[in-house]
Length: 448
Image (tube, rainbow, N blue to C red; front, side):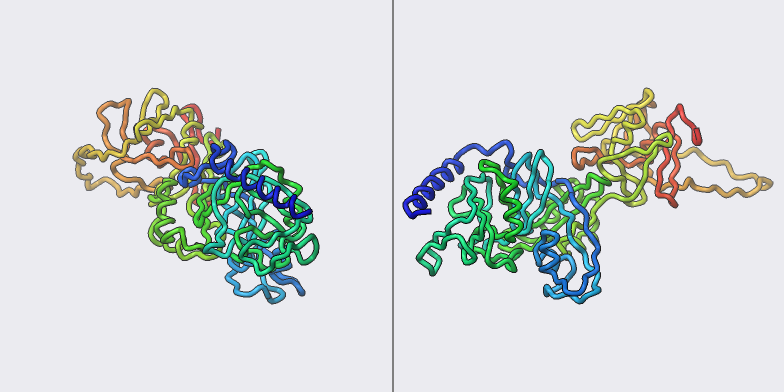
């Protein structure tokens, strides 16, 4: 590539980048509103692996498309050298920082690039990011503006070198360049593959040579790219509905206090009530980079012996099973949330979750037992207890108000199961051994 052509190309890219900066954000590109991405999908599964002779974290990183840092964080290691026979975690499970229809999402603290196609995350790639300060990788919405095989590197003003470096083994860009609509910023190969996973570049995102070649074939000019700075991510698994929180180091020291940020994320997600102080301390102290379980238990809910699949896994809190309103709909109930009041209607009766405390109706006087009467022992139903307020007397027998504030998570209403089932007079049974809740509607009986 001759010098005049390179100068012309650089000018055109700068003009295009300027136009992009003032253009409306693409519908494909997520907005900068952090609350919009509080809850995202969890993808992938971690692997357990026994290190074989001759393997180190660099070899394993290349094999699984991970950085050495990803493997060190996940296993609490400080070196890429690992003794043969050591069992380690291969961290392949991720809470997505956001989603796109098609394009790339780059999360700088994670040192990771996500590829999306047809609204599905199809690949994760490790990268090195800018070293910080004036060389910190910028964030924002942009696009891929050009792709080059065997690019020529024009040394910028900070480089000691003045002459361009053509294609070959000494080119710091490697043999692939994916340019973004931010002047001087792109994804490229490298002559320093051991730096992948570090904050080591002058603003670009370095990638393993084999990885950038693969990515080069998957992307197109014009594809949206979002560069994010998410040190805390909250996501829900599509496989089992369980909720996870994943954290990464604040590499540029711009995220603020870690504990405060985690609290804010949980609050925005509607989870703060269900995370106690001890669990919060564990989340704050975690340095593994692995998704940490926050909510959701291996509880099975069956209605008339048919398992109900919920997008949010049922969970136990304070002796009470909570589940999403999907279970109520499986009972044939109509569910409506309006002005923070959840209304459930079934079989001509309505129950309102309005959070207002109720006074329990006075119990009728109990006659003293006859001396001749035999002693009896009552056996409680094998099911978690509930608060007295849930059994409050309602003036209208067709409308009952329960003193529970409805919770929302991932677009679903969360309710405590026992009080609403009792209100409708439904038969139910909790089987602790199998972590199974059996519910029967009026037209069904156990064993039918």
